[in-house]
Image (cartoon, rainbow, N blue to C red; front, side):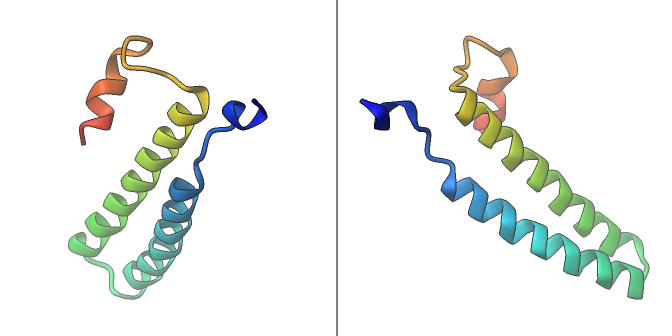
Length: 77
């Protein structure tokens, strides 16, 4: 019964960790070679981290699409 109360988010935690490491390197690269393309790549990575964190929160809260209108759209990405 206790296991039913747990929600697995380890896969998302691992992805978040990897993307955060990537973002750190991309930020260093952008600071070394400043151009629009490097900035866009860095910002895209930050956006992906935000999406993963949102997905993690949704999973932990056990929200369903009928609870939040944008959950369905968010998960379809």
